[in-house]
Image (cartoon, rainbow, N blue to C red; front, side, top):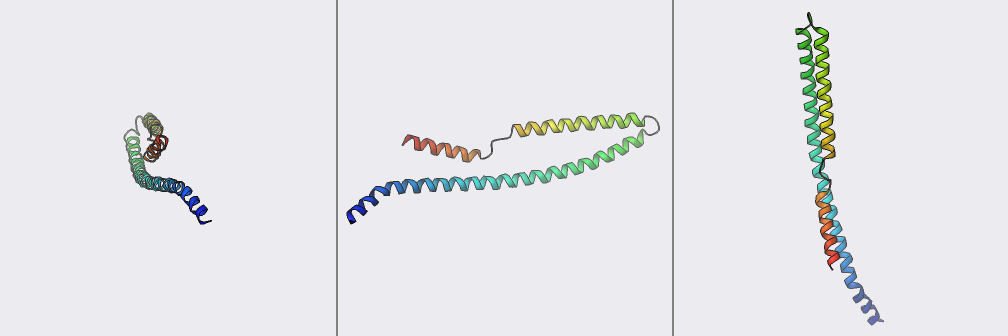
Length: 128
């Protein structure tokens, strides 16, 4: 009976080591995913804060510029000045929207390092 139990343990020992190794690799990869998520969150929060501050300040500047131009041309070309300002704002808004869409489409792949490590792991297992 003890010989059967020992032989079964001996047979399962390499399998247990392989399973243990696989779980260790998965744990490492999941930790890498967590680190990448934390870095991406910090980066996005910083960009979001700066973007909101820039939008607020730019809006205040545009309001002041609009008032300045409207006051300067109030007696002569008031509606033409306001129409020109509106056209400039619309063109600038469209350019910003196109740039944002382009940067979203060309953004780097999320979890690129993790996926590369999974690819290396898969290649190692295929060779064995």
